[in-house]
Length: 231
Image 1 (cartoon, rainbow, N blue to C red):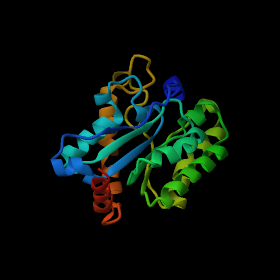
Image 2 (image 1 turned 120 degrees about the vertical axis):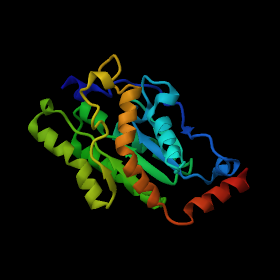
Image 3 (image 1 turned 45 degrees about the horizontal axis):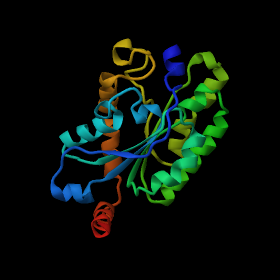
Image 4 (image 1 turned 120 degrees about the horizontal axis):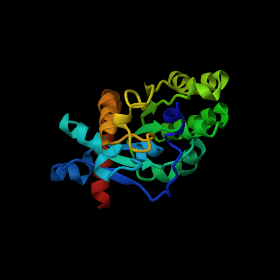
């Protein structure tokens, strides 16, 4: 249970966005690939891993191997709560992403913050992304039983409820297939190792492809052309 309860406790300093992308042709490098903002906490940030072994780099590699290359922006901050994410969202959106993977809430749960507050913060993040015409894949988290039945029920329902209310693509549990397995986690027993991240990427990949298919037609070409003009 400690694995589930404490895997995101570490804090790091926010140091900016990085972009992961497999080697591409000059045309792709010019900015015509879809830009996916992975907006989350240490699971997104790649806590304890090299850049190449982190979630965003492995996801970019997997997409490229499928013939669906994308620029995956690492918008993860270890230790971040939904309130922290909301506070930095405008800055993250200034990088002009076209799609969003929204993975926040675990640190609210670790600190036993009110689920209602987390829900409100996530709703505001969703609203801002929607206002910018950015399709979202909402990635869920689950509370451990030792926080109490009421808390667990109220927290766990945030994500499916929001997905239904806002008609979002939904991946129920970021750590599906990895949580609690020592072979797939780092020495602290808390954060996924490179093998664990590979499993996360493998399992979430179909949902990411569905998200890419939701990108409005012409959006990619228009933003790519704008990037070329600016250069």
